[in-house]
Image (cartoon, rainbow, N blue to C red; front, side, top):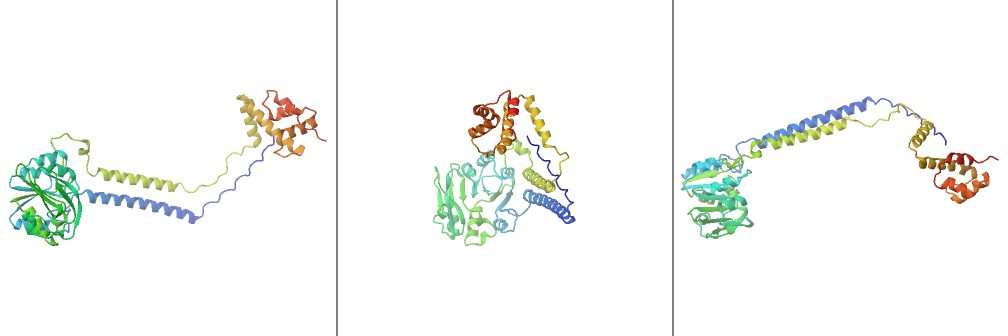
Amino acid sequence: MTVADNPAPAPEQSPAPPSATRSRRLGTVGWVVLAVAAIIGVAALSTYLTTPRPGQPLDPTSTSRDGTRALVTLLRDRGVEVIEAPDFATVERHARPDALIAVLPTFHRIDDDVLRRMAGLPGDRLLVLPTTRTLEALAPGVREAGTLRFGGAEPGCDLREATRAGEVDLGLSTTYEDAGPYPVTSCYKGALVRYTDSTGRTVTVVGAVDFLTNDGLLAEGNAALAMNLAGTDPRLIWYAPQHRESNPDAGTEIGDLLPPQLPWIVLQLMVAVVLLALWQGRRLGPLVAERLPVVVRASETVEGRGRLYRSRRARDRAADALRTAALQRLLPRLGLSAGAPPATVAAAIAGRCGRQPPEVAQLLYGPPRTAMTPWSTSLTPSTT
């Protein structure tokens, strides 16, 4: 076999120009600044979203557009005792037969046990845009029917609170229908329903919330409807939960022991890990070609492979290597191409060395033999 030429050594790499080095440093600094800014931004957002603060939607002390301070002030001027209840304990402490418990929607979930305990409290109910669970627990006499948008609707019923208010603008509202077994009064095409249960408690359900806000009171008869519904009893308990309500008598779950800021902390850590991975990936820099420390000659590779074949008794692979090398050296001498048929090659070689064509074909193309070395030596063509 021929010995391959030694590969030419790779040219030495010139040092990177100062401008390229400066660009890489600026890029690294940019990634660091971006990572720090992202972490600070996520931390600020999590602090803003998890810290209790005044001015929440339907907050009776808020003067913002979605607050309800205007309605609470009007009710107090009218002589209604308004009790702000941020938790169920306050509701339970102030509930009495001549009180109206207004349950307002917030982003915090009310536990099923709390809903069952609330269903047993005395007093009337005013449910504003309740969830399905709240509706089933506190107003089982009605169920959701659909949604409608009201631009200015007449009551269409004989409910005194609605007829005195007249035409109102409820906007997008959920509608309700009778679910039995109590007679239900339906107003504003089902956006306002009321019934009296077996205990004499009055249950009112409204499918809209905007008409109670400071901004919503200014539209049509919204102020009159809000005051009529919320001022039916001497005491109004304004229940807008500010955290997840659960039964204190029930067993403590693992989730109750975790701080509410934990999801935001985990999110910050995830963002920091991603940014750190991107930063470290950029620090690897571009690929640089380098010379190998040792140049291995082709003859050493061939000899090493031969020793490996001998140690593993790989006669088939050794025979294939000998056949391939013999054909590569014989075909140019015989004037034949690499794609010449085996019969043509065997006949040409047999004519030169005095062997029979089948014998030559068996040596060059047949199965390997253990006595391959003597035969391959005898196949060396004579020079003329």
